[in-house]
Length: 225
Ligand SMILES: [Zn+2]
Image (tube, rainbow, N blue to C red):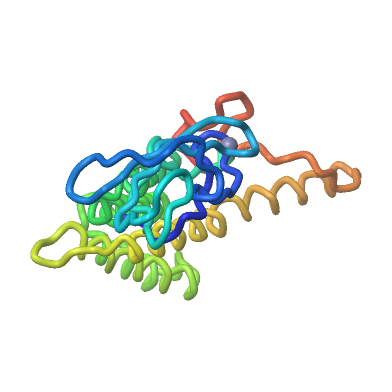
């Protein structure tokens, strides 16, 4: 699944190198794969590391590639993003962490479709038609349209066989989708908060803006943004 041994800790999300922080010897598991325990130096939690091509003896592996680790690292979703975007992107993140590249891309396309619906597109339409409608009506900025169209294309790949999405593509499409929500939602929240503060005659503070449509915690159950 992965060709790197440097990962984000699934517990504390700090980056660390699995092979440099082993706490057990590698054990053979099956089909030439070996497993060992690695410990995050940040939070001291452990993960099981699976490698292929192991030829070393003892604690220090040689010429091996990390293929999986458990628990997998599920990307954190910004809590300021409201539902349904948050829950849909969280599902995409779970797919990504589990190596389900096609499902991840298809979920990202759902996020884009929600964005289009939120901006006035008909929920009955295909994602492509929804995006074209937004563009024709001037309801979407050009850069956002291009990014959304790219996500839609990967989503089509993931949803319609025989096309498939690679893990690298899934990581890219997930990252683009995150950026889209950051631009389309979080930036608006920040601007609205700053404008409100200015109107109230206060200096902008570093306080984080709440999700639009709610002022309580958790903020995501309101689907209106
Ligand atoms: Zn950690």
